[in-house]
Each structure stands twice: as structure tokens, then as C-alpha cells.
Image 1: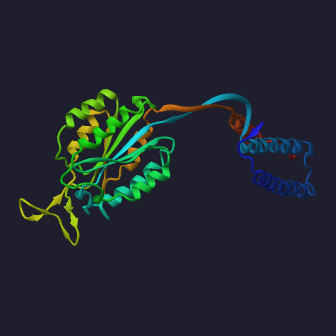
Image 2: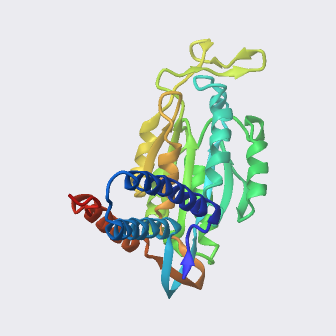
Image 3: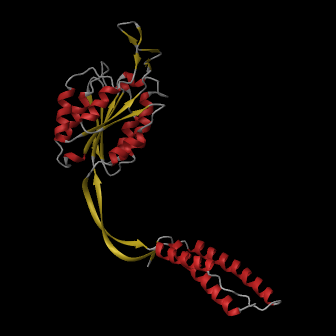
Amino acid sequence: MIWAYSDNYSIFLLAAVFILLYGIYLYRFWKINQKIKVKKRRLVWKMVLRTLYFTLFLIAFAGPSIGTAMKEIKQEGKDIFLAIDLSRSMNAEDIKPSRLQRMKFELKNLVKNFSSDRLGIIIFSSEAFIQCPLTFDQNVIQLHLDGLNSDLVPNSGTDVAAPLKMAYNKFLTDESQEPKSKAIILISDGEDFGDGLEETIEQLNQSGIKVFSMGVGTGSGSTIPRGSGVVIDQETNRPAISRLSSDNLRRIANQTDGDYFELSDERQEIPQLIDAIAKLEGTVMASRTVEASSNKYFYFLLAGFVLAILDSILPVRTLSI
């Protein structure tokens, strides 16, 4: 027999409390016996009954597991690319301290949930670059996330199709996983000045690669810091305002059978994104067979409750009249 809760100290403490309280109970009856006649044999039966169901409660508390069975445990893994927008608009401060800084903080927490998966990082603006190839090394991923900033990429616009195309090509040349276990997490404020998006979405669809998009920013937006000033709109000669454009991100997610989420001070949907990625069926990386046992505490608990109910509704008379 295997015990799920093997803290003997707590069990002995509960038993000691029971013995103490029941000793006080018996002492009261002994005092009563000095004045009136008490049926001692019936008192003994009552003590045996209560001791029995209290013992059953203690056994149930300890969690007895009886019998063994062999159980196969499978370790599944997925390939996930983080496609991260590093255009200047990600420095906007409509999310504190900024879109980019908030996104880095949330992503560092997100990757901790996928320790059995291969993760990679693609950074992009007008062009896309592999920042970190697919790896199981969480420390490497965290290190690259720490170093993200908008100076790592050319900033002459934003091309959302570029990182998706690059991730698709990397998946295509990697034969270690099945297509159903591949996904892209696209993090951006949604601004897109590139082309070729429809063709890329079609390729991802045909390969079964899902895109989960994360919109970072707010509808009201804010100016974009640049040095000691702000970015100026060349057409109006006024400070440029960057706003979250979710339409493109929603469309990409919907057309690849993924989902869309948002990150702002009002909407913090990182937990929902984690759940959606976790539900993806991964490729079996390894499996092992372990000996498992079943916790049978319920039977002891049920038997104890039955005896306790009998004790309460069918009391044993201890006084003779």
C-alpha cells in the first residue's frame, strides 16, 4: 500500500487530539457512574464504534493507494516561432512603460510555460531576421528577449508578411516535426506597409501552420518617442500617432485557424494565448512507462461517514432507567 500523504506527524497529532477528547468524555461518564448506574458494556460498544470511524477518517486522510497499474506517459513537443515587431511604433507609450518593454516582460513569462517545446525568435520591421533559431534552451531565449530593441532592425516601415514567410521557410526545411505541431506567435501593433501577405497566408494554411496574433497597443494610441523628441508625420508635419490596427492581425489569425489576442492596460490576454498554444497537439518526443497506483481514500471516507451517521441516528443507551 502506498500513502499519498505520508505526514505521520499530522496523523499522530489528530489521533492524540481524539484520544485526549475521548478520554475527557469517558472521564465524565466515570464521574456520572459515581452517582448513577451506567451500562458499561454499551459504553464500550459506543467507544469501539467511534474509534473505528475516526480511524477510517485518518486512513482516508493519509490517501491509501491500493493496487498497481502500468501507465504510459508521453512527452509532447511543438515548434513555435515568436515573430516580434521591432518597428519604432513599438516604442509608443500608450502601454506603460512602452509597448516594447511591456511585451518583453510578458514574453519572458510566456516562454516559461513551454519548456518541452522548441522556440525561436524572428524580429522584423520593414525586413525580417532570425534572432534565435529553434531551440530547447530557455536561457538562450530569455537572453535574446532581454536584448530586444528597435535599433536591431531597419525602420523604414512594417512588413507583417516578412516574418511569416521566413518562419514558413524555416519550418519547411526542418523535418524533425510534423506540420500540425508548428505555430507562429505574431506580436505587433498591426501596422502593415508591405505586400505578399495573402500568398503567405495561403502557404501557411496549406502546411497547417497556425498563427496566433497578439495586438499590442490601444485604439487611442500615442506619439512615438525618438531621442529627446517624437516622430513627426512627414505629411502633416505634426507628431505621428501610432494606434493599434487589429484588423490585419485578426484576419491572419482567422485565416490560419489560429486566434487573436490583445495586450494593453485594459486587456491582458497573455494567459488565454498560453492556453491556446498549450492545446495544440504536439509531436511525441519521448514516452516512458511508469507504475501508477489508484488512491482509494474515498472508500475509507465513505465507510467512516456511514458509521458516523449510524452513531448519530442510532445512539446506544448508556443509562438504565
